[in-house]
Length: 82
Image (cartoon, rainbow, N blue to C red):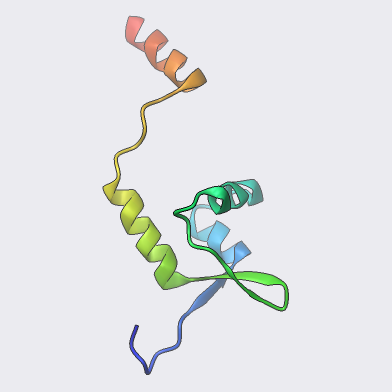
């Protein structure tokens, strides 16, 4: 980060909008994920640095998705048989 620029912070609502108006539970689940950026707190409100989110997005884009499990796996197998 350049010394002359301040980091840009997004509120939890803005982070949810950034990822397609996802639910609050989606954000809670990402917080359990050790790779998702941790928020900083200002007056008991959570905020994320946009540069941390961009870094996480880059890692997600370069990582292949996991194989389907549970119901998704059953649906994939059933679809392949049709």
